[in-house]
Image (cartoon, rainbow, N blue to C red):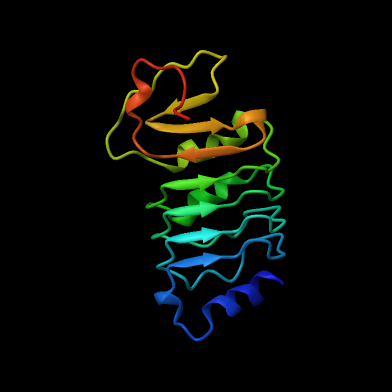
Length: 163
């Protein structure tokens, strides 16, 4: 089923502004489309859809959880900066094609913390990067990445992201 058909099947006659969650896993799409009118969406999952790009990702200011696992994304995370994801608390990118931590750098720039927090210095052998209280975690095997913008109480004195 394609993305537009899956959105229609889940929302039926419900007005878009009343929809707060969409689970669109395994819908076939190379790019995100058809979500512009869901301004109150809080949770969106697009796992295993075959997404190759985030170009044109819609502005979703209420979105708190975004799952993009098991797609073929390898870059373009800067597109999320323009998506007004001010409430985002969880972003899953496991199983994509990101090959370096530099590919994830737009995620750190995308979140401006309310108050500056000191970033912990990270030795090169650690499995995470802490910047401004955010953490990029590399999952076992280095395949997946998970970004969490939550304040990180562990950043002073510990050299690893929490499991």
